[in-house]
Length: 230
Image (tube, rainbow, N blue to C red; front, side, top):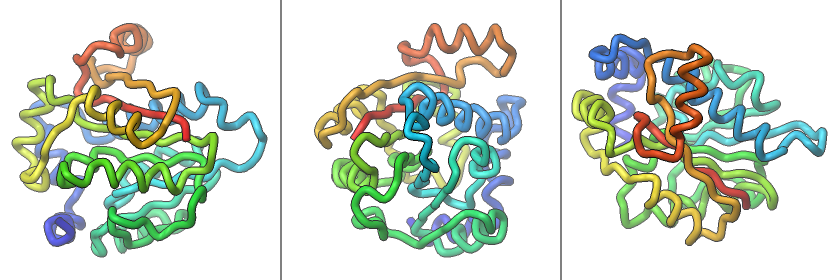
């Protein structure tokens, strides 16, 4: 898998944009939607209540495409990935963040190192038999009371399936639904688990946002988030 992402790393944005071009939306639209979701999770979960700096880890960060949209969300941001070419690109593009090579089986961080850990559209690249150990590692590096969050493609959305089919580095994808993600979190010992679907409407206008929030429990949006407290 590392070789695949090493090959496409320098052209990551171009490849993604081509795979979703049928939607008429740019890659940034989807990145902003994810950043807003993560920001809401921080607020709803009360992670800033202590007043301490908030540190986060992006597992499988790739080239860090999402990170320019998270500067206002986290006080410090680490990213890790198994693709050396992607990490090199992330370090160049986001020198204020910290990036490390990693293997999903064991992340290079001590227990409880972060307040928030997330993996955005990563787990579908992981072999299903190791999904549980991936979530266990995510949980391990989050402090007690912190939050783990998984963002994944919604397999029930036909446009999502089309985008996955068109994306060359999704050739190994095994999509999982929100129910399965929730079960993985529950088995890992996380609590206060919630799931929400998003990216239902191709608009960020207030009315669209309100409708999307109202329908978040239904498997309609292009992606979903599953989060839980450690």
